[in-house]
Every structure is written in structure tokens, then in C-alpha cells.
Image 1: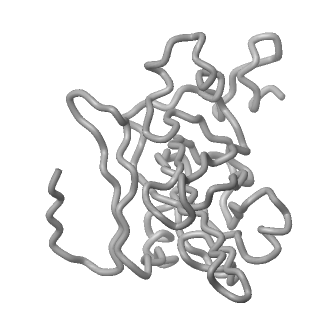
Image 2: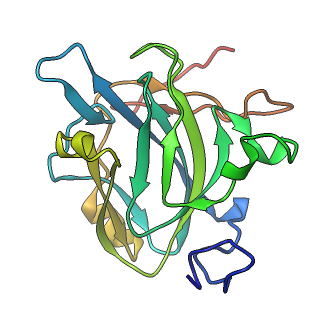
Length: 212
């Protein structure tokens, strides 16, 4: 437990649970979970794709990312990541650090390796439920998975391969899979003052205008 727990009563510290500074974050990513009830058989997808054994995204060793993980369903998907824990910062765009200590959402602001993604109000209709987290990738290179921790969902395809490499050359050689369609994600923090982050993904390089 010496590098995995933020419980002050246990041996603590270690590089995995050191606070992640904003200056460490090199990339923001959006990851979407969706079980499409309109298809036959039902599609269990991450970022619109069933698991196919291919690497979808690549990270560099000893860097940190911010991920916004979304759920388009009215039922939860427990997000689970192998190897690297993550620190939850926002829930449905709300900054957990700004909440009073007696708010029931406050305890979610901690290091975790599994997190129930908040639900959408209507299946497949924006806005999705979401949480935002930061994670630092240390120690291990190679491929690992993220998946829904409901094993039936994972077995039906709600799983994705990610890759951790140790230098920029490897990132170029490995490539990063492009999304298949344009998508706009929930902003965070929400509400905001004076600024917020708006994530979107594009299948190809394009000029973009965002109107608020």
C-alpha cells in the first residue's frame, strides 16, 4: 500500500500519489462509454468502438494527462483502468475542490482505480454524465486496458487498449488512433468563473468555431 493509498493512517507517499501539478499535464483526453440499446446485437462501446485488440491512444512515460470520462447511458458504467491510479477532480463538470466538506460528492475527490461514471438523463442524448480525473503514468511501459467493470459489458466489447511508451519517437511510431466522428464534450468546470475547458474531438484536421 505504500504507493497506492491516500489514507493517512497507512504508509503513504510514493510517486503514484504525489499531487499532480497543472504544469505536468501534457494532454487532455475524452473517453466515452455507451451501450447502444437500439442495435441488434447491442453494441458495447468505448469511443464508439467495440474492443478489437488495437491500441487506441498512446501516452509517454513520466507525464500526466487529464481525462474526461463520459457515460451516455441512464445506468452506470464503472470505469476501471489497469496499472495507473487516477485522482478525481470534477463530477458532471463540478469542481469537487470547491464543494464544502459536508457535500456528499466531496469524498470522491481522491485517488482511485475504479469510478462509477455518472449517468445521463436519457440514453444517447446529450449531455452525458461525466467525471474528470488526472493521472500520472510512471514505472511501466507497454499496453494496458480500460474497461467497464461490469464484466458482461467488458466481455461484449466495452474495453479499450492504451499504450505507454518511454520516448517521443515511440509515440510517433505507435501512432494515435483518430476518432471516427466529430464530438463535443461537457465543459469543466461547470459552473465556471472566469474560465472553463471545452473538449472536442475531430476525425481530421479542421478549422473549428465554438460559439457560446
